[in-house]
Image 1: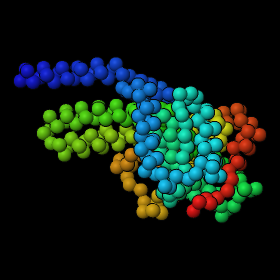
Image 2: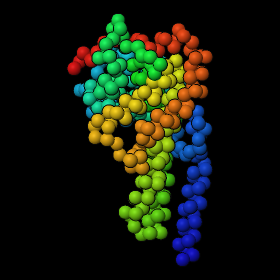
Image 3: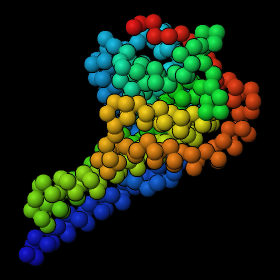
Length: 296
């Protein structure tokens, strides 16, 4: 018994030392977390992963010179500039797919599906002014909503959430081992780790990306009121597709919670938006897109 207890103590003590020696703080929120991969290694892993994904997506990748692909890249780079990540090689890729999704790979590689752009269009039959993106009212226009999407994905990269998840997976593994030792049940350990560790942590990172993204899009002079409008559309689309799962079963907060949280943040960022951007720059955020999806 003493030998077993001593072994567990050594493992626990070693784990604590390892955790404390890899403490890091998330940008913008100063949230404490563990990251045990160097930034250089993260960028290299992201580059390798991106090449693999592009190989799979290849036939459906929209040419970079297509008007909508250029719009995604232009808006993405404008938001990314506000993040001041000089060692990131930002790339923004548009994929021809009805899927309403976007994702980011560590190091600044962002992929957006055309189905999401369709969802972001202005309600007036996709009508465009002078070939550009339609302008919006108080809740912004198409470009602002696209900026909200891209800012959220950029926030994941800036906050190094992908690398953080890799580190947190080791903590979850220790939790699984500890629970299994106590209850001698792999099934119970899996359930407890998933519902009390993995999923809540994922939702926390998504909420943090919402906050950082809202900050970044505001600093890039896109209308922050487009963010809650974005999630209203996503929630409606999800309901049309068969409804959403309960939050405790999901990797993401519910649309209602995200909208409520973002609206609580709006007074502060709207003040910065009006102060830093002014009428001319704020108006510039409403236009600039071109053309439709000519490759379809």
